[in-house]
Amino acid sequence: MTFLMVGLFLLFCPVGTEGEELDMKAKQFAKLEHFSAGENWGNLEKVQWQHVHHLYLIRKELKRISCDWPMVIHCCHAESGHSSNSYHYQGLATDFHFHTSVTLKFQLIWLEQAISSLGLDDFLSVGVYPEWKPEPGGFHIDSRGTRLRWVKIKGEYKYGDTNKILSYLKKGDGP
Ligand SMILES: [Zn+2]
Image (cartoon, rainbow, N blue to C red; front, side, top):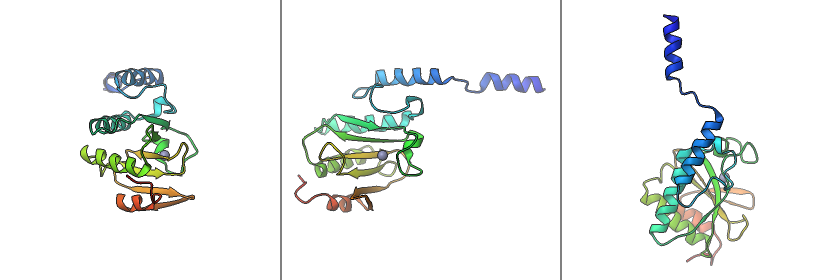
């Protein structure tokens, strides 16, 4: 009986080395438009594919609505350097900026439009960072499964709905 159970366990337990995991991620990235494994994702083994897929869907949707803005990845998985309980530690969050000349306000409006069209409003959380370089700043998106919106200004996190967040962004920094 015990041997049978051990045998069944060995047969069905999902054994995979970290090397295989990394190889799988590289293959998945190779098939993905707009992104590559060589960007600043951090430890690729710890990056969760579902999250990368969300970014891909957003990038694709933005392109569809004529906002074909490359997303420049700052980081995804990290071991430290973010707030405690950060989703970066789980490989579920990405910091990036859009490579475009449009204002941050305009970027946020269309980013939210894309997220909404994808039906991901209540699944993704979005942070806006107008002080990040290069100007006019960038975004944090995480796949935490619930909705939260914030903007970080002068070291302070301000939370609220998208309109509230837009109101915090610089006057004149709008479409
Ligand atoms: Zn972040």
